[in-house]
Length: 258
Image 1 (spheres, one colour):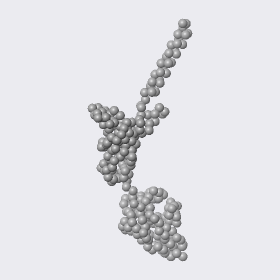
Image 2 (tube, rainbow, N blue to C red):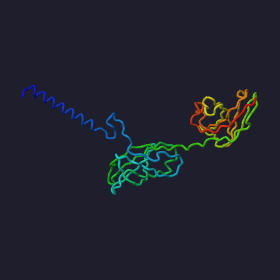
Image 3 (tube, rainbow, N blue to C red):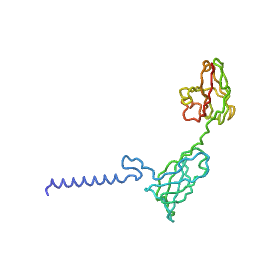
Image 4 (cartoon, rainbow, N blue to C red):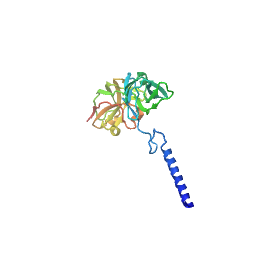
């Protein structure tokens, strides 16, 4: 074999070794990421339900796994369900149902405040120092209890003549509120379905959870018109940005007569 052929053979062998090492390194990445772009793979467990309301009672949550993660029923192994919130881990009591399903008890003590937690499952050998397998950590949300919508039963007076001076109307109903960032406000609206463009904020006084007062300024009473009175409850500063998402009452007709 001449010298040129030997050199070509050596170079070819070196290229083959380099490519083999490159493929091996690419194949030794973290098994929890996908080959394309190192993006995390989909969760291998799911929760039902995955939300609860603040102040709720104890309840049982179902944890379902995919084919990529299996729960154990072996005598020498155990499933450990872990709830994590604010960097504090709380083991949950769980029951094996099948290789793809666990039942976990969520105690009421974990539902005392709005919070975003995560839940994961670890499979342990009872003699082991580290888990044999760890599932994805999936979110669980504890939400604030929804506020009841305000309700208008009646307003008084229901009409005034055009040209009147400022008028104070009394609004009776239910679920009115006067807490920090949770205040009931009355609105004058020519279109109650579009408060953003037609709603005028009235100076509102809180009397009780069943009564409000609202001042209608004389400027709104100069011409005959028929409008609707609506009450919203929420953050007063937020209302000035668009009135969206707040508990709102029914609308009641108010008339400025000729």
